[in-house]
Amino acid sequence: MDRVRYEPVGVTRLLAEMKDTAELLVDLAYSAVLSGDSEVAEEALALEERMDRLQLQARMSLLMAARSPDDAEALAPVLGVVGAAEKIGDAAADIAKVVLEDVGVPDAVRTALPEAVETLVRATAAADSPIVGRTLGELNLETETGVRVVAVRREDDGERAWLLDPDRETAVRGGDTVVLRGPEAGVADVHERLTGTPYSPPAPTDSEIADLDRAVDTIVLMKNTSELAVDLAYGAVLFDADDLAREVFELEAEVDALEERFEAWTLRAAARVEDPVSLRGLAHIAGSTEVISDAALEMSEGVLRGLGTHPVIAEAVYESDEVVVRVAVAPGSELGAATIGDVAVGTETGMRVVGVRRVAPGDSEESTWEISPGAETRLTAGDVLLATGTRAGAQRLADLAGDEIDVDLE
Image 1 (tube, helix red, strand yellow):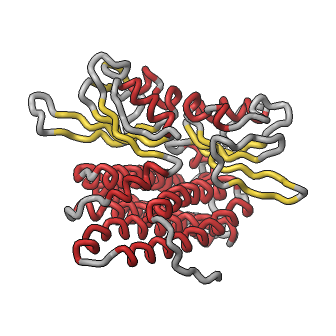
Image 2 (image 1 turned 90 degrees about the horizontal axis):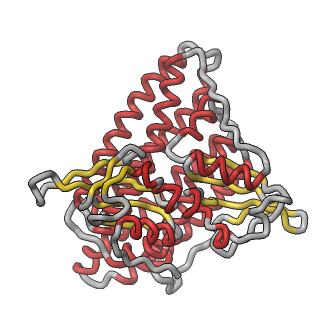
Image 3 (image 1 turned 180 degrees about the vertical axis):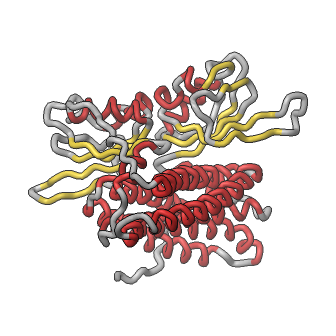
């Protein structure tokens, strides 16, 4: 294990890299489980080591910056974000170990995961694909289809290598293995253009044990809820939003309740399967997923305790690959009297709306959040959207809402 020494590195850059690394770790870990691919799982563990180095460097830099009690109070929430990002990375690596240690998971898990909020698939680029030879910036997949290229694996001089942070300048080559994430319709479109063959989601696999099916469904719900909690936690610390932090608190409690339900159904199922040990993989994934929701709460704890948000956090979120934005819906805009599905927000912008805040009728001081809105959610003037995605997508979303936001597109 390499020794980590203090270097004068900006905390903003370290936080942004930790955020991107943690998000990629989660994607790769679930992709490894989905495909049973040990190479993907190995890459996840390599990223965990990178995360460990980043968090140590961030802690050293923060210790150097704290010179008074006021500094300590201001920097405490930043330490919370550092610790939470590391915890997310560790939990994701533990999910990947389910594949490496050959713990095994029921087939029902591999068919249920693609049906989560966003579909996650791996595809190999055909040599004659219209995508091959073009950069991700030229393709603009996220804005056009809502699909994000999470990672690319390719062979160079006979050796396989992963591009774990593809950007606008990354060009897709024939033979590349590409990890895609996004809405199923968009993934199906990109998959066919990339491979030349239609996307076929895994055929549903139901066991003969109802309690086992319920346990699998609960894991998927835990995954979705935990990832939503992380998105809202970043929104809470970015905008110093106490109401969002309270939503994170409620979501973390919901995941705890789901885990208890999962444990009960798994124990019932264990009495009916031939080899109860085969359910260990489920238990590992559920436990790690619950840790991710704990990390989201830890991230937003500074807001809940009234410590406020340090500017370095906002800068780090804006510098990361995936931004978090808050957009207000203006009267007369395209979103002013439509559902999210009517305007096809995900496809048109590549953004994922994770929350909608509404002001109560007749009471300008009272507002409520609709968390994880769907295509049927109707928007009205005055609504505030919290969304995640690329900077270009954020600008497009703001245009649809008739709002002006400060997003650096460089």
